[in-house]
Structures are given as structure tokens and as C-alpha cells.
Amino acid sequence: MQRKKPRPGIEKKVQDLENEIKRLKKQNQATRANLKTAQAKLQKSSDRLRKTMGGIIQAMSLTIEKRDPYTAGHQRRVTKLCRAIATTMGFSWERIQGFRMAAVIHDLGKIQVPAAILSKPGRLTDEEYEIIQSHARHTLNILNKIRFDREKREIPMMAATHHERIDGKGYPLELSGDEIPEAGRIMAVGDVFDAITSRRHYRDRMDFLKVLNIMDGDSGDHFQPEFVDAFKRLPLARIVSILESGNLDPVSAEDMELFGQYTLQALHDLLKNRENLAEEDAHLVERFEHYYARGITDDHAGIDD
Image (cartoon, rainbow, N blue to C red; front, side, top):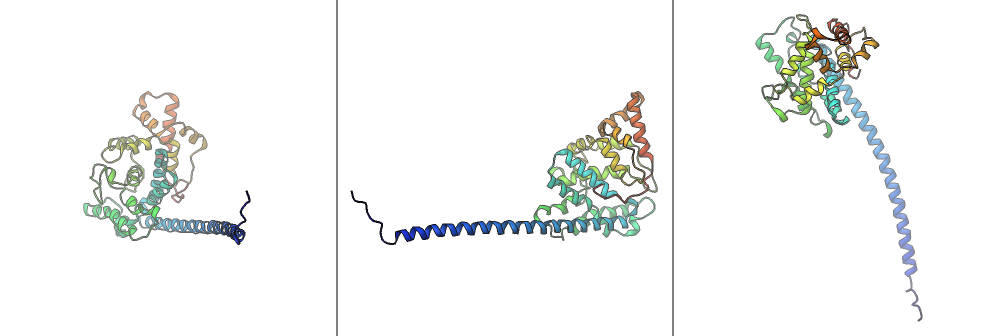
């Protein structure tokens, strides 16, 4: 059977089609290369923006502490506690970074509180205490005016809800349970712990057994129990490093190694039964109380220390 001859021009059309395919492949390769370059530039811009935002937030934090000298270092210690709790709970790195940013500026609203009240050398009146409480709502109002990117848009609510309570009796919004952002619930634990373990010119640090009893007693009412449990699972070495983060006289390496063998829960159990301690446990308690009793000589440690 005689084969049919190709129609005139068909070879040219096939060749043109092959050439077009080759051209489109090259164009696609060039487009992908340009996209990769653009993505790299966008990442660099995003990194620069993140660093800039971090610097602004750090400046805000330092400004607050300058106006409230009696709580200097508070935001930094709370930030470290929040990050430690969130890490123990297994939150992602991205979520923890958001929690961290909110914690650094959780008292931002204090810039709206008169300096005379913030630095008052003595206990506050009921009226002055109400003014102090207003800082949480001021924090929300100020941060709501900042255009955070999509990943950070919850930061205003995170930062402003550290005085909310699980039972709905907190402030400024009287939220309860899961209505409170996770960061706010975690921050509540760190905020109270730091407040009652910090010195004021009119009082010393609270007895540490009493501190831990308060944290346990308020679990389920003030605090979410899971976050208190995570807090008490923290290595004692981490707690000591945060409590002593502003001290120019560092904790000895030997003692830090000792503290690393215990959790905060283990210390609580020992303090509740201190009359019947084994020698090594009694030594642990003695070394912890040595550091807890001494004064803070400097409070300029960085947030990431």
C-alpha cells in the first residue's frame, strides 16, 4: 500500500510548534529564576522589617521601665517565663515568637499612667490602683493603632489580656476561659509569679513556699491549670536564671548544675516537707534560698539572655 505524502507545510508547523515549546521552557526557567530572586529579596526585606519592629518594641519596653523604676526588668523576666512555659507546652517557634513580642510590651499602657503614681514610694490608694489597672486597656488601644502583619495581628489582644482570669473576674475585658488568648493565659502565670517574687522598696520577696502555694491555689480560677503544670515542670535552673537575670554576681556553675537536676515542682515538694529532707535535698534547698534571699544589683540583662 502506497504511503500518503505529508501535506505541504506540515513539517514546518511541527517544527514551529517544537520551537515554541522550547521557547516557553526557556521563558518558564527565566520566570522561575526571577521569582526565586524576588522571593530572596522579599525575605531580606521581611527580615529587615522584623528587626526594625523588634528594635521599636525593645525601645518601647525600655521607655516603660524608665517611667516605672520600681518594676524595672519585669517585662523582660515575664517574657523569659512565657517563652519557657510555651516551649514546655510544645508551641511552634512562630507562635512563641508572637508570645514573646506581646510579653515584651505587655505593660505598654503604663505610658498613659501618671509618673507620680508609677513611682509612688509606698502603697497605692484604691483610686490609684484603679488608675494602674487602666494600663491594660491603654495597652490594647495603643497597639490597635499599629498595623501588624497577618502573623502578628493578635499581638494587641495577647499583650492586653495578661490580667484576665480564667473565671472571668479579671480585667480589662472580663474574658474567661478560652476567650482569653493563649499568650494572655500564659502571661498571667509569668506576670503574677514575677510580681510576688520581686522586691519593692516597701517589702521583700515573698516566701517562696507561699509563692508556689499561691500559684497552685489560683490554678483553675485565675490561671489555666495546664499552664501552671507546665510552669512547674520547668527546670529549677531556668527559674533561678530568670530570678537572678539582673544580678552582676552570677550563680555558680556548680549550683546551676545542681538546680538542673530538679524541677520547680520538685522544689515545691521539698519545701512542703523540709523537716524530713535527705542531706542532698536539704543542700538543694539551702543553695536555692541563698540566691533567692540576696539582692539584685543590676537589671540590664537582655530579653534573650
